[in-house]
Image 1 (cartoon, rainbow, N blue to C red):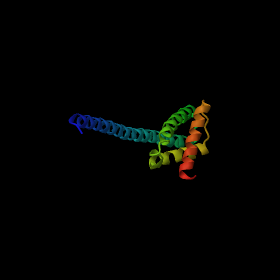
Image 2: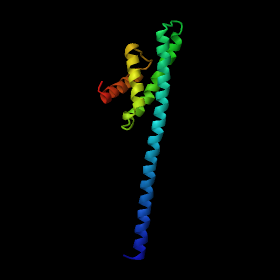
Image 3: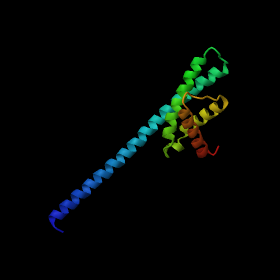
Image 4: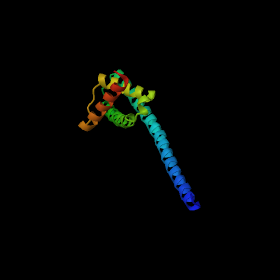
Length: 136
């Protein structure tokens, strides 16, 4: 093999190595970012659930508007959490599973329909994925 061929082969190997290294790094960075976002949504959904349960337990009737705001906020958090839950790595995250289970149980006890049928369908899909994942 000539010196020129060796240099071209080495350069090609270096380029391929950098490409695969960059792709691997990008995939790992995306996974870390997804887990951070998922943790944030899980925390927010947990807070919404705690407030909603407190309001429901106190039989507060004057705070219907606050209830609706919190229900809508929970819808958004469940949509975000559900979109990350579709990732195979996230399906085994205990915090994500626990919050989705709590939200499913809450919504079973206090049914809520958003102003969007599409949102309701996506949340139902998330709960179905959860049930399939956990066997409930």
